[in-house]
Length: 348
Ligand code: SF4
Image (cartoon, rainbow, N blue to C red; front, side, top):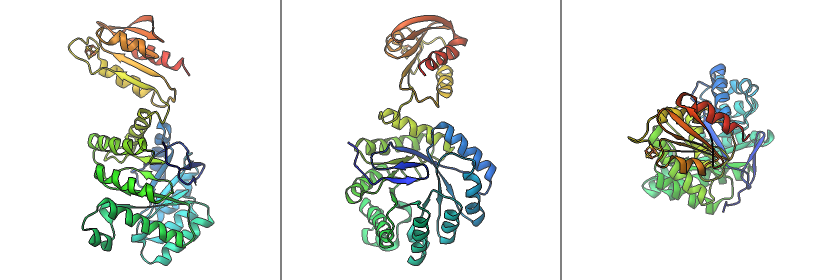
């Protein structure tokens, strides 16, 4: 059962308070390159990204936010480190949320100024601790970036904002280690009721990052912890969104076409990998709650295809199409993708 958190508005959507889990990602373009950044955000949007973060390392990037925002349709978050003036500039240029680490902003007065302006503009602030950048005093106290250390660092940041009468807060406690991340969020969720941004930091390359993120995020969501997720990959951000969507679909937290496909073996006489890959690409954006079976032969093929809403059981250079448990026709191998996609769309 989902833990109830405070509801926080981010642009035109809400996170927390029982809202659906929102998917977010971060661009890897230069933010000041407005064209490239907008193009990437539009691609992310089309795949199902609901909140996008952009790094703001300089003034030009902060100023670019207003031009980017006018051409996209999802809330934009400015990621700021070190310089509070960049945070202010991002706020003035329409950022819907800013992500800061008060610990590296310096003087508390600067954090106070950010909180004051964020409040005046009605936007949220995400604070949080990452295992790789804990304050020295906390590291000395705990000797290592343990879950307790990470949580203490995050709570310090939250209390600081609260002292400045700011409570439109989202919190994260990330580690690159799965078990540390899980434990940190478990502890944090017992201590605060702000919405939680869940994910690992520096999770790794596509395969390692996907596995680690799926375990940590999946486990936490199943325990009701988490209001927005980011799968962090050393890869294209588009893949982050696709993986995040699969995590939510697997946990039945998001509608979407569920593909059941076999791994193939010596009995398979079609190019099933290509067929499954192509079908997946073509239905990526459909939010239909149906299942599709793509099976290589007559061993498990007809059984799985019958169970699915739409399915194909392949033979030698051909496939038998199923819909709602019944055979509807036989098609040639080069027609399987088109015919399957056509039948999938018939449910929309
Ligand atoms: Fe092999 Fe057929 Fe099973 Fe696919 S369905 S793995 S082709 S036996």
